[in-house]
Image (cartoon, rainbow, N blue to C red; front, side):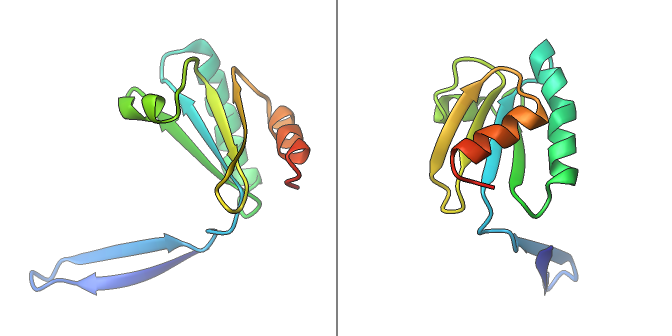
Length: 114
């Protein structure tokens, strides 16, 4: 669920600023490319996670094709790289390579996140 605030400028343009109400949720950031075969497989998992587990944890795919600095920011050597954070946004696990939905849920569970 998102809370949105409308701001109307003097030019009569409407800008909608949204802040996520799920700020206290654990999160999963997946650093990937659009061309790597394992990343292409992960794209389907990402879509499943974003719909089936909405409200339980946030899923954020980051494509380094569009954002090359993201790989450096997370010290990524291989793609896909999965970065798991708890509700306080502390990194609790990091993995490289394709992971199924069940693998991802197991890693969250090992980190004490259910």
